[in-house]
Image 1: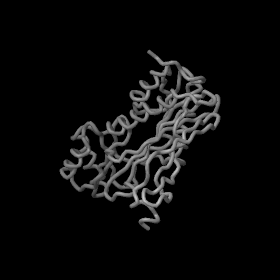
Image 2 (image 1 turned 90 degrees about the vertical axis):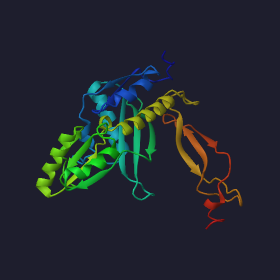
Image 3 (image 1 turned 60 degrees about the vertical axis):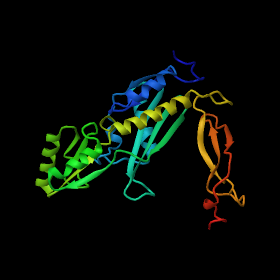
Image 4 (image 1 turned 45 degrees about the horizontal axis):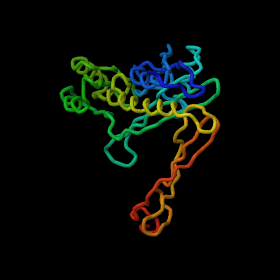
Length: 278
């Protein structure tokens, strides 16, 4: 049974996706009484993982553009869009990290509600090979064929093939790339419908977004009250000096900008104190 909707939450929303994300985004929103309609738009024009089309601006810029395009194509007031970014882990060598963002946009009010998460164990990798046999171990690690792969002839070249889930097709694409440049770059296909790990992360993010949309602001009753940022300054357990640790979470409303600080209990380990451990 659908829950009572917070004040101002529309009963339909347009989702900008070409990659099956509605399968994990629609169910949590349905529990709020919001039905999701896939918009007939080409989301690849806002950027692709394979580099065919460069993303203009930030992840938020791209998600906002997709959501707006979805509302324009359907005539609905609310739009939803997902955007991801994957690359080397910023702190751990040889590891990858992914960032996923999910945006809710209400064109009537201009209100945006976003949820973001990171994935420290994404299925994101690539390997340069000079013969197809070398790719066997890589494909196994990537979870092929559940996770599809792409094949490029050069790092900056558009893929010769995407969405490959058949070994014979992979070998053929590798052979084509090697014939052209002497090498082939086999990579995980990061489109959500081709990468189960990424789709599962988006599913978790959709549940978080639904919970947040189902939380009305205590000041204005608009949907989407939730965490907007954190404040550092958690005191050191030894000397009491402020550290980089989170001292409070700030919950807020993106409609009326009302905020509440929720202090975090406890103290920081002295090992992370700039005075105790300079």
